[in-house]
Image (cartoon, rainbow, N blue to C red):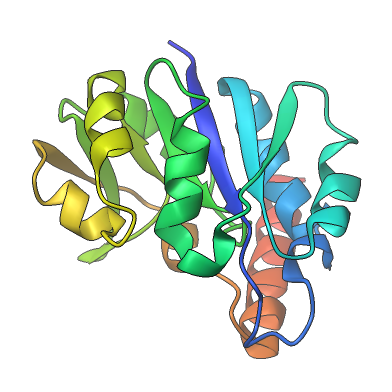
Length: 194
């Protein structure tokens, strides 16, 4: 069963000091790495851009099957981007911030097996990303107030927590140190696989 996906890429990257989505990683970009992992698993991938829209557009146009939409309200926070992306969904979909380039494809496939309406990966007791949201929640998500957030929404749902062997579900890029650490992890993983 293939799912669709919403990838959030509208933020300011303020702690990074530069547009992190277009930074180089794993012979592509941070955002490109997320998209390449999703392409084999997903039918439709929607990237939500906002701040630094042009650089996001430059990354996404390299990929067939990836649609870029603009969140003009990105300054209202991440949930505004969630709501913008959900407008393009019709069935089950993954939701992932675009700065999680180390998530394994096997994690996405594990989440599809989850039985809840909202499925969350857990690595060594810590919840992470991506999440899988079933299509029957789309209308409720569309109705959720913009000042809400994903955790508040999740806590109203039948949620399934799936243990995964993937530290990538916890690894996002907020700082230069995060970026270097994730590059090292992906590099080590590639050496083992090749």
